[in-house]
Image (cartoon, rainbow, N blue to C red; front, side):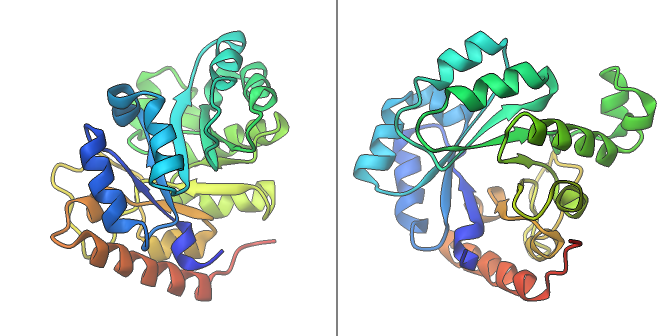
Length: 244
């Protein structure tokens, strides 16, 4: 992939009007637009028709499916406007992951969400995660990455801090998508993320895609900010050194 293709911009906006504005601004500067819960709840499946048929850009459907296998399978069977990527939580186990993989008929690649990037050791301990995993979120990420791979997922979502270990454990073809990317030059007011990396660091560590939202969305010139991120991606690709 070219550097630009590795950049995912999340359409974390309240309505189609705002989403369309950012698509127009950024369609020549990013590889994928991410449709998450906020926009999907606001606009529904009709927005997926708009993004494919009218805007004509590729997208990542990030709904993080999380339910019993039968419900997940039926919901995924309704995704007919094919995204390039889609997500499912790993923590509900192999049967749900397998149901998700089996139900998709539109060519989308399935990513298992390992440990959300706002969670740290204290949060995991409060959730009842065993101390050997709570004290080191990276260990829990690897456990779930291996589980996702065994169930047939194409890759995982994890923090950039875990990208290198996931690639080493699961192989170079297993996709790694990293949110919580924070360029050193962009301040994010009230940031809720804990396990963060810069675009350069995440790509150098082995990430296939990075998700950069607020540093671009809140910039005075979003297109210029996206170009700066792509420049970091390009440098990270040049300097990349992943374990085999």
